[in-house]
Length: 494
Ligand SMILES: Cc1ncc(COP(=O)(O)O)c(C=O)c1O
Image (cartoon, rainbow, N blue to C red; front, side, top):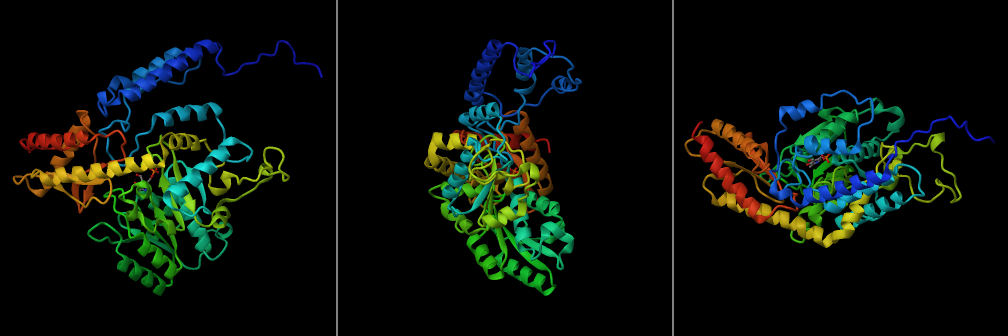
């Protein structure tokens, strides 16, 4: 065979000057390690000025730009304006902080640019298999369960509920669709359940009214008697109850449902128990809190995140399913172009399952690596101590709130979430909402700390979720005193 014509041009996207790119790469690593090391010296969040926002209106670059200039642009326009969740005084919503090893691992995974969806003879598949078995071991979930690392807990909830729906439909739902169901399929969760459950129910074609929202007790845990009653009512109406979703840590208050109670009801009623343990599942590792999630191991499926309370970089969540066959049945599809070659040879002839058989994604990134490296770096005992530290800090902060006459605790603090507000005898209820919203905004805008806001019993509350391995005890003290200071200042103008 003749070689190609000498005038054929071969272009690639590799650097023209590897030496210069190597130098730039080293600078990036140095800069980012400095950035992480000094995070506490900066504000948690700062607003991007209009000039910075305008920078992102430029059209697509038609011609190459020098790599060092692109990096300079990143340093000027991108890096200074993050959400701020790696900062020790960031506690808004429920965010994770990331680890240094996690950041480096992301680079390693990106350099390999492996696809952890199909093909069994490659290292990423083994790493993910090991991470999944560590997660099961750490959480006390059966080792025979199947699992998949996901983009987050929303995806994990969607996968778990897909398996639940298909397994309990009583007919071939994958082929016939939800329309073929003779009875309305319904499921139950507390009114405190995360919005991703409703989204999943809608995506699954069940309709959001199929999700029966149960009342909660004074601890914001699902009311088991109300649940039993609702199931009985649905059966009487010839609906088809198929699943209960339990919460291992609600977003609003960190409440953990009585998971053993739910598992008993599900056994009696032949229902699938799915547990959303986005962050709370990891209480299982904390020496003083593992009892709170007792019963979690009895769930048919368990959804959780590692980018919240395992402190890993976004994105990494996980779904575990007790019944491997049901899990695979919900997603397995093998077109000709994905056929495997039996016999142990070649890239597709190994004995590991393909991860794509357990979810809806074919191409998947190598998110397992950052988990594998970070868990090895610190060990599960240290993670347990840090999770316990976060819980203890939340309890400490709740004590500060209770001890201050200007502050009010708005909900019990079973784990690491504290809902509270500033109060003043001179201000009526309606004004307190406004005042506390302003306190939240000022804390964010002045770069003091980042709480978020929610409503407890209809009243606006400042919400802090402590999944932050960088927060010191002093940081919580600062938060309490700054809320009081701002509350006093702002209430003068209301
Ligand atoms: C209890 C709970 N479930 C599910 C989710 C969704 O997880 P993700 O943001 O990883 O999709 C969250 C997010 O905060 C959550 O708190």
